[in-house]
Amino acid sequence: EADIYQTPRYLVIGTGKKITLECSQTMGHDKMYWYQQDPGMELHLIHYSYGVNSTEKGDLSSESTVSRIRTEHFPLTLESARPSHTSQYLCASSEWYEQYFGPGTRLTVT
Amino acid sequence: GIQVEQSPPDLILQEGANSTLRCNFSDSVNNLQWFHQNPWGQLINLFYIPSGTKQNGRLSATTVATERYSLLYISSSQTTDSGVYFCAVTNNQGGKLIFGQGTELSVKP
Image 1 (cartoon, rainbow over the protein chains, first blue to last red):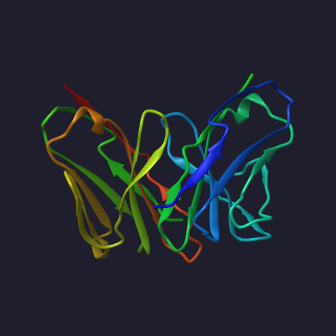
Image 2 (cartoon, chains in turn orange, green; image 1 turned 180 degrees about the vertical axis):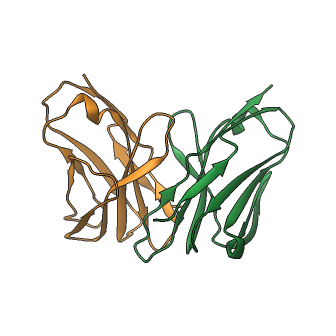
Image 3 (tube, rainbow over the protein chains, first blue to last red; image 1 turned 60 degrees about the horizontal axis):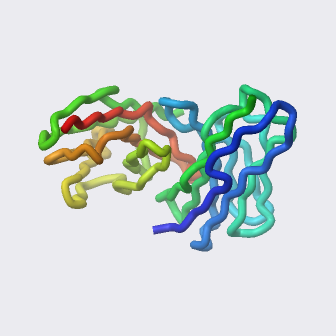
């Protein structure tokens, strides 16, 4: 089973602040993903990467950006947080098809 | 794109009861996963099952790819089984998971 870590687990932040959500995995997986989930709803893909220096936008439009400078690290950044960004953000990685998820970051923007 | 539908949306069980959760998908898939989301929001991998049958303790799953559905069986349910169960699929080389809307299971003592 993959080891995948996310920090922080919970974050409450004011409108307009810049934030970075961290995601790291120790399994050497090339593929990494960010999903967004509103309470009680399904997950939606917002960003993905198939390797270093490769990033793509997902199916759900997001104002966040991502980078992939190292295989194990896939951070997500919001330049200016807004209340509409309040949600849970889950990071995942995979070698082939089976995806493994981190514990998630629950973000609240006030 | 591919559609994923789960049923039932909600399920309340008495501890010890058995249940079957269903996942229908609208196109052929090369990946199907079942997850359990616990009350803290973490997604726990239950099965990777694009076809066939697998069992893990009290849980088992069957995917009939030709008929485009998968079933998750929970036997002798326990209160710790409570949470939301998601089915998710991919049908292209990208590996992007498409999630169903989930089944919220509540097991009462």
